[in-house]
Image 1 (spheres, rainbow, N blue to C red):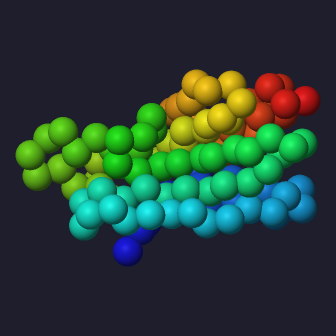
Image 2: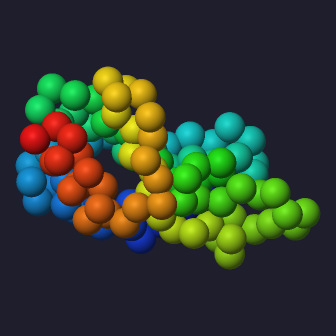
Length: 104
């Protein structure tokens, strides 16, 4: 089961409040490789927000015995394919500010 961090829950509520439709595109590739994903379109641009294994703000699992629930930083990475570079270690409010500034 994929754990949805608090910041992702906050982001999804913010999207709901703004009437922005989103899709849960979370994925478990292996038992220990889980990524919570939220996909949506903002002003015609596709946006992906992630948290999980190997994400900027999630957890790396680099330490032997690393535990996702304990080691996950609980922050979000946002990626807008149009720009091609992810921005990470963000809280939900920072994600919304980032997309609003970039996509105005």
